[in-house]
Length: 249
Ligand code: NAP
Image (cartoon, protein in one colour):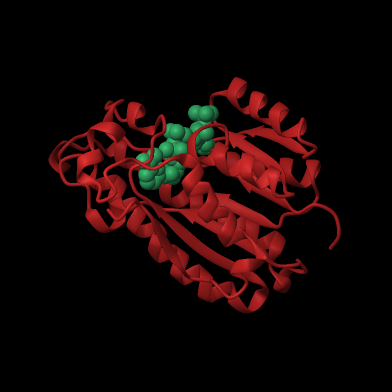
């Protein structure tokens, strides 16, 4: 297929997703930026990317809901192709012990962090798999080091949801490996983004610095570099891999 490849970045309006969108555009990709609430941030980013010569569009939609179909309908309408999915949208919640988790908290956490990622991947496979007439492509799932650490006393539910992302990555990678699709994951460590404020601990990234072997939180840009590598032809024989981008944590 000719022309610029197209990537859909879920949760692309801020943080790691926005860094991925920027880096992808600078490396020749056109970008569909998904967001759920902050339309101004998504629109400003799209305008910034368009100024660099990339095609960039935005689509509102909660990946933990029935909006998934509309997100992919917008992809079909705007671009008519998909070469990579960065399955990035994810949430934490307030620090709580397991016995205090509400059912609503767990439903939201797993709807967005697990079910949403599986459903977005399914839509991507329908479009990219050679078994469905597609041209192949790649999926990068954003997991977390929490999957291996467990996040006791903060959000064990979040950690468990990321464990599910890791396992899903391994299984899906094998399921579609012969159909031209590579599926990999990144486990970021503590990255300096707004997610910590959304969990009620705005200074968590700097406060945790001494617990990180490299003694500093990571940058969204450093995660984006790893994502772009996994999306690229340089990773042509890499599938089912889970890459820690965590400063050694
Ligand atoms: P962030 O700064 O809080 O940004 C979250 C992004 O996701 C925003 O663009 C937000 O859109 C979007 N979003 C949230 N819920 C959504 C939903 N239901 N549907 C669609 N979009 C949604 O988060 P981040 O730190 O960049 O995290 C991105 C990913 O990295 C997540 O999967 C997270 O678990 C993972 N991660 C982060 C860290 C870290 O330390 N930051 C560490 C490990 C893993 P709006 O702008 O519209 O709100």
